[in-house]
Image (cartoon, rainbow, N blue to C red; front, side, top):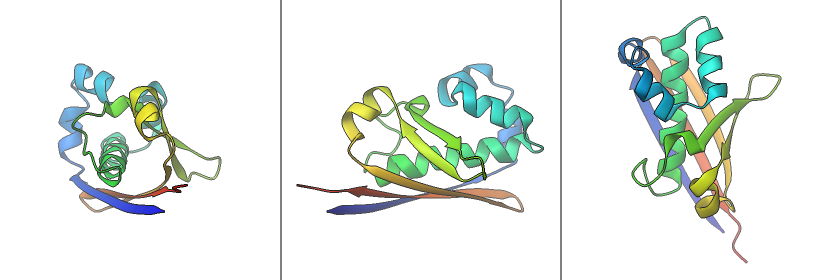
Length: 122
């Protein structure tokens, strides 16, 4: 068994400007994530939290976002609001055997996320 952790923290304020960059948003966020950001009461906080989750997942997988496409790390939410991650495309092909658990938080000027990644080896 291999167990890894990843964490990331971002200043929420910088995402107010980032959200104005359509190219960045299309490259980084899935349609579901963009919808969540747009319908949240705090778009910059939502975007920062999602971005942190993507970074935390990529760090837990031992890569960082270098070599992974951010849109292939897809954040979604259960009916109760708990976040979960689905890998798609090349990320799924490379890391599909990993079990991933994420947690996202926002406080004051910051958003943060952590990811625990588990690989059951045979």
